[in-house]
Length: 437
Figure 1 (cartoon, helix red, strand yellow):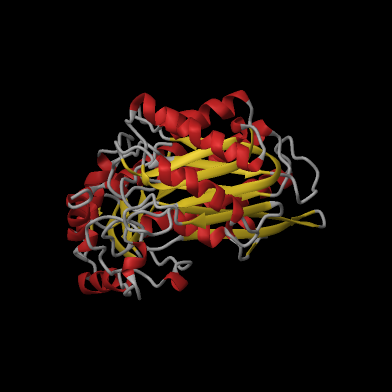
Figure 2: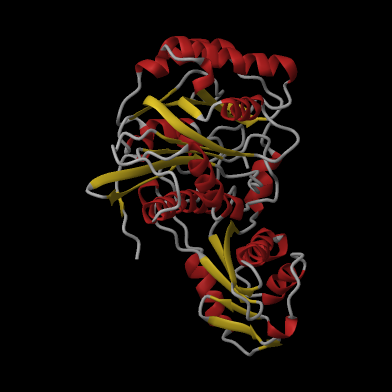
């Protein structure tokens, strides 16, 4: 049983972190567009980034900084322009951004990690950023996480934030996180960004290993549309301000800390999948019986990313043939005569044989899990020229996930894994057809 509890505060819940989110004038919409997270002391830094060969300048700068020295004091994120495929001038803009912030915080530019989100091919609006950075620094607060989370969204309809706390020894240790992402989500770490803070003390190699494993069980297991972004970034800072002993190896306390880190990442990942562009429900794919966990995760993600499966779920159609077809092309060998498929509690296929099932009940299950509410003010999260569909949970209810659960057993092996996705609706095409027009 998990020994942590949910708390408020997001990335400012851990000790020694402040955050801010402001409107700098980067977005044409006039909505918040510049976020800043700062640690009071140098923090151990780790990152997992896009595998795309077309990358934003901020990604390569982060990689460069972390390779040279795995420490950071600040994360800055602009929304509105991805600053990807912007050539030498885009690189120069990113470098200048760090230099401006370094002077404001009186730290080295190498201690600043960056992220950008928005339209590919668009440079950062530097005039707005130059005046916005001092404002963001002035707005830093130990309650600034919510403002920061609002400042990184683009086509998102809800913010994504979480914080957890547990005790190591007699001291509380906290991990907080925020994320953004709604479309262009197929991380191979979408457009997906996540920032995580922690007040435990962890050695740099171990913190990086923990984050990589957590990403493989969370962000790398979500898909909305099969498109990997140029800007995917998961950045985690651990500043040691809980005053707990430094964790340098995989002790029992290290395992507990990693489990809490993984839970934070999984929550944020599922929030992104649930908020997929045009989506009406969250899908959770559970695979067991594979030869390895990696094989199970590969099958699960293939099913989650299947356009035919996603379309069937949108139509509330319990068409298990779509699921079986996706599993069969995942590139993982298994005996189809051992395949079992369940939709919630409904067994659709067992030992490779179709079963008679309550189709009306299965349809009702999909309708129930796909129930959605109307945002009070959808324009609050509108960032493009298209109208954002007013179809999503109220922001106050975003912490609840009620997924459509699709379970597959592919054999008798020990491997298991999960993936998360969303259905594919007409609105997804509308949103992306009108994204820049």
